[in-house]
Image (cartoon, rainbow, N blue to C red):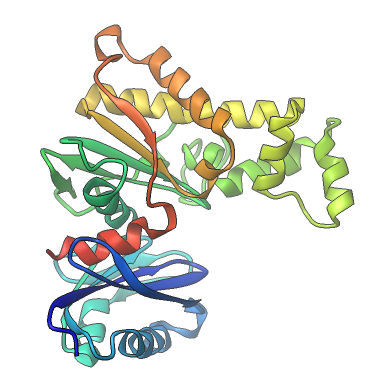
Length: 312
């Protein structure tokens, strides 16, 4: 039997759920992953999560459990108000987990959890005011002000992926038009590339035929690195819109650190450089030496670590 307390972090994604046993200083001792299978319903998912937590933590004294979930979350009540992937609405996740685990449970938006993880244990740990943006299948974000996670009046702060960058742009999954996510997320980069090669020559067409599968984001970044015109246009457009949004954020909140995470940020160093260049271009001169833009240090573990430690 262990004689000190540990934490549990849960990162519930649309495809996978990651569960970790952590020390109070953010170190992952053990972890496990499973398919989400959210279409089976919240009761089924919670049952499998509880079973995995019990197996992972046997013999350990658990202080609390933190859960990061995509979508709109009321942390004060522990409710998933809306998770679009599975059309979950008004799911009392905190009560469901607490009833079976008999531990303190906190439920938070996954981007907010990742923000807290990066701020305390990752690339933002020396910051006082920080912005976090995750660029993956979608785009999410979070805000640290005066070393505290800023949630807003209705726990809705940080939806940076749905800032409008072009009101005449394509329809976003959220229903609005021209959101940042409609241009710079992994799915949107893939969609824009597939549309472009219908009418323009590109090595992406050759890659699609050679690999015998549809274009994905990694292919687009590989074509970008090789100088392909279509890929260059799509990726540079994504980087430009990200940079513009960050410049606006810098002039609004004056953070000393911006952390960029998510799978898309793992793909190409030039993409990061382009974002930094555009941000510098669009901020007022007096802001240009006031911030750093950094790549995530925790990446796929950011939300898991942050969710566990939000309770503390």
